[in-house]
Amino acid sequence: GGATSLFTIIKGSLMRPLPAVAEPDRLVSVEPVRGSTILYDFSYPDLVDVREQATTLSNLALYDGTSAAYRDSLETGRAWMSYVSGEFFTTLGVHAAAGRLLSPDDVRPEAPVPVTVIGYDFWQRHFHGDSKAVGATIRFNDYPLTVVGVALSGFSGAMALHHVDLWVSLTMMSAIFHSAT
Image (cartoon, rainbow, N blue to C red):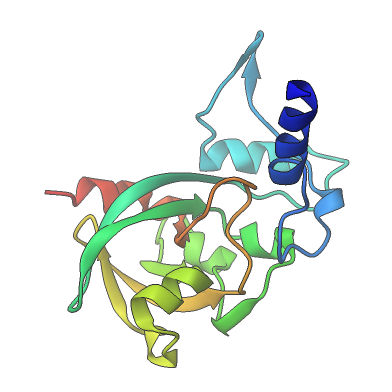
């Protein structure tokens, strides 16, 4: 009975398709491994190397996440931030509810663009669904980011049990976390 209940919980939460993703059954996860240990550091240069060598993948995107403090003229709080490569949203087949999503032009290592896409639920909670959220500035760890878009309702990231509030370019992470005071 206990095993059946546990499997039901796992199946219902971990094995269900990601909401708002175009073809979740075609997604695979690539993890860097050394020996028998999964490595959690996967850099932008690593992504470029894997992309150049991959022959069986139609697209490749990188993502990871962390918690960050935010503030604007109305409130302060903490949000879950996912830093992603420019192909993240197109790889998943996700569309914007408002504005636009991040693109490879936002994620240039030599000149990253300080923009963010916010999650639909964050948009509702923080901006009350106001379209003026697109173009607004939010400070994360005291670093200003311009909201360029809102993800579709139901999309909460690339992990089934993890709800993301915003997405930023992985090339912005150093600036965001070195600006914290």
